[in-house]
Amino acid sequence: MKARIKLSEGMTFVAESGSGHAVVSDAAPDVGGRNLGARPMELVLMGTGACTAIDVMHILRKARQPVTDCVVELDADRAETDPKVFTAIRMRYIVTGRGLDPAQVERAVKLSKEKYCSATIMLAATAAITYDVEVREA
Image 1 (tube, helix red, strand yellow):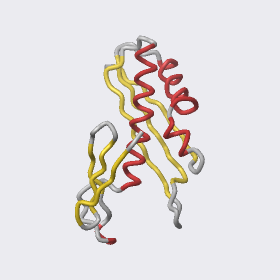
Image 2 (cartoon, helix red, strand yellow):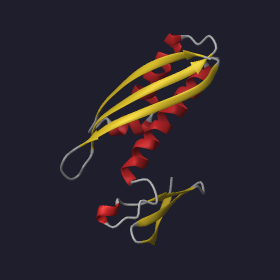
Image 3 (cartoon, rainbow, N blue to C red):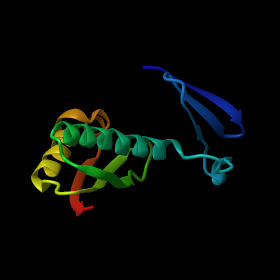
């Protein structure tokens, strides 16, 4: 896996993935940024949410669950001092479908957290990761 991060101007950077996709990252105005993109740690949190969401959808589709929507909402706390690592991450999964089996959804989330999601498992070294699951009927 590769990435390239290039200064655009000020404290704004363009990050390009090895697969050719780009995102803008910027610092907060109080440290010289212009608020033109997500902060780097926001990108880490968003990447974690995307990682687990992809796992959950993959597992549910393999189980032939009729999912029509999947949302993962994340809320995180960071350490007060440098390095300001995540110390707690709360994830809320909202999975919608027609006739979903709640046990299958819970199983998919648990498998992602404990076995498949590289980001979640890596961040668990510094953060207490908790989750709750809501299953909605489409």
